[in-house]
Image 1: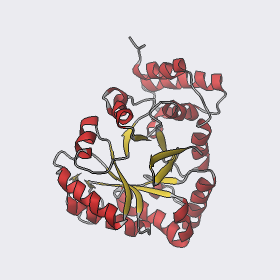
Image 2: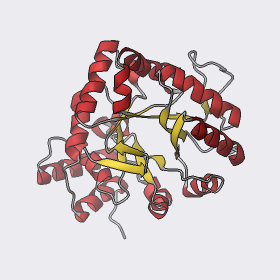
Image 3: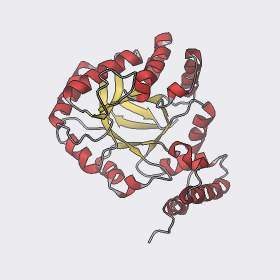
Length: 300
């Protein structure tokens, strides 16, 4: 499995396993253990979480695996996110839905995540969404203390525009390592708004959430998705792939910004499709044909 180097102390697997919908997989703890072991055996060692996924349940489901098999922790990297207060019956402090990147909330959330995940550190902590009421000095204070305590190894953000990324970075003495963005064959906004360019400029890395558009790529009858499926099917035949999902993953991973897609499925076959996509090389023309299919017109 190809690796992505964030800094001297941390690398991630190029394919990241996402646990956003883990509460819906309806797996026993033993089934979750087997899924994680299969991922690790394939080189998928990085697992993506957030404090709000399932109202905290998804971190706890993962934590049950580590509680039963603590030796697995040293074989993996754990990502989690914070900064959103969310109305959910499982969430404490359930006082509404809003963003909160205050020092107190970051520190509280990390402690809650560590408890749920059954670990004493996370490899990477992200601010989940840009917070219009953010005091970057408070975020920096929390990050410094968490780094010094060893509870968090590295830091990044999610869904930040380039100006927002650079603003927060200016308050830190160590680099933000990654930005997790919505990127897919059906969502190219972050290629146009400067977010991807900013990652290239800063030599930071990118993760792609919802790389298959939550399944819409396969089922939606919108014109955009009909066009995309036709183009992806054509390119699938040209390169000898098994499915259009492999081409959708390859479209991201062929980009020079070295994007790591998050595969949010409990089915090993879906994860293996992303792994096969690592070996697919798209031509520049094929890459732009997919972009044209998404937009509905050729580039000028």
